[in-house]
Image 1 (cartoon, one colour):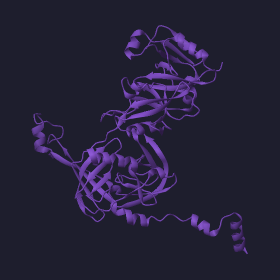
Image 2 (cartoon, rainbow, N blue to C red; image 1 turned 90 degrees about the vertical axis):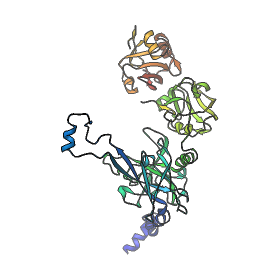
Image 3 (tube, rainbow, N blue to C red; image 1 turned 30 degrees about the vertical axis):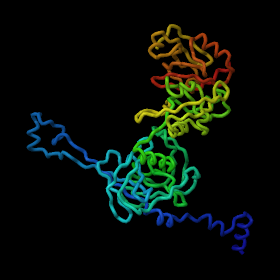
Image 4 (tube, rainbow, N blue to C red; image 1 turned 180 degrees about the vertical axis):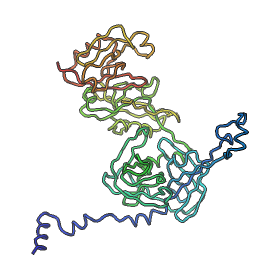
Length: 464
């Protein structure tokens, strides 16, 4: 009777016993590992550290040198430093992909296959900006990975990593995709795939597989406080890595485009102040003089919405799109200016190897000091000497922060106000006149100079 009642209850709720059993089934990774595992390799890199002297911090002309020579242990002139990582074969004739930091500064690189064969590897090229390196070993008929499409990955989807954590070859770990398109500090060129797959030292450079056995990323970084896995792992999408590898294979280096602007994230408050319905796009806070953006007529306070037909949803999208654009090409940029959409054509320049593509802004006394009640600040005009030093015309320096709105906006004492919206501030009287015409209770955007940084902050006007 009870069994019959239980069965009826499950059916009444729309859940059958067979469907529950199916829902509780975990994925089986054995077929994936057996088929794709042989293409994953262990990478050992050795760096020779050369000591200029044989005794610790004692030059040969020092009076104590003879003492240490007689009684202290002698330091070897050369020492070896070893590090371990992972990689995977992308072509049967021996091209291997890994992380740049796995082989950086290495004097000797050894690649070990799953069948225990070892090969000396040559570095074809390294790109530190994306943390991708391409190696070559003299071999043929090697098993290779199958490349997948990371754009088709879905958050919550199962993924598998194979690598050599702490030197344990061919270790398999699994988890799910936690997020896509992650931006990390100092990594402007990679929309990272975040997972909760267990990644540890030695996994770096190894592949991240989807359930079809296709490589969708290269395991590159972890967030950790302990040195081990904490469930926050980041992988470079394989399409980004392959674009880099193709250039490394062709020329040994990566060429990127640049336009010469400083950008910042467009918050909802800033979007409102510029008349945008939603915070989508990259806000330009400054333009490098003589750079491609300057020549094309792009200005501070412009919001780039599309670049070469590609949607710029977040500010972090723009550096990646521009970097992937071939230098010398001319592209159409759609931007938002003074409440309307506008298109300009910009010719892409080549980014210097050690230069910056697009900088991201990080969130003085005058003659007259005046309180601006609607903003909750006291400001004064810059002197001619201060204007010359900062290379600006006009501008106001913040003397005091008096209102809660100004504090909430992040204004600091000593900040220099350069513009309100897209109108340059030339005097205190002009600044007050602009504020009088602004609607009560709305956000206005102030262009602020803080040290070497220039950025917009949104501040709500006092309704009184």
